[in-house]
Image (cartoon, rainbow over all chains, first blue to last red):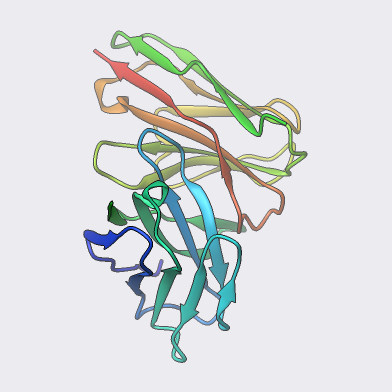
Length: 112
Length: 113
């Protein structure tokens, strides 16, 4: 299964944009790129996903490189509530199922 | 609309004891999942159920069994608990068999002594 590489931690000032990078150089043509986040002592929360084109929703934007070997999650204005661990995940099909494999993610700290 | 609920929230077991973790969702989702998260680590898939009546192994199924009781409920059983199973357990559900958007419960924190 394809793997992702993320920085262990990042910091951002409150109300500034945040760009969270993810490398996935071994991505296959059918792998979707997913982002989840996990606030302290909570279960993960879906953020966004995409295949080839950039995607926007109410929480964030996902920018996908043309060669799909990297992507960036963009939080347009960081708030204190955005402090969490952010996971970049490649969903893959295997043995008739679709699975998400979580790595260690990026811990985002937001500075007031 | 409670989403995904899990019981219990906390549990302490002695080695060799058994227990069942309960999970229910009220979103009429087809697929359900059980994950475990060890300290400082990401989540690992234990078992999943793509649809009612089916279950399949994930990445770390050894020592666990599951039952998809109906469309709403998916339970995880530890037959003989071991200290290595000390972890936080999360249940999740998704509308589609291809679980692009999974909704997670609050977790069960299990300690095996």
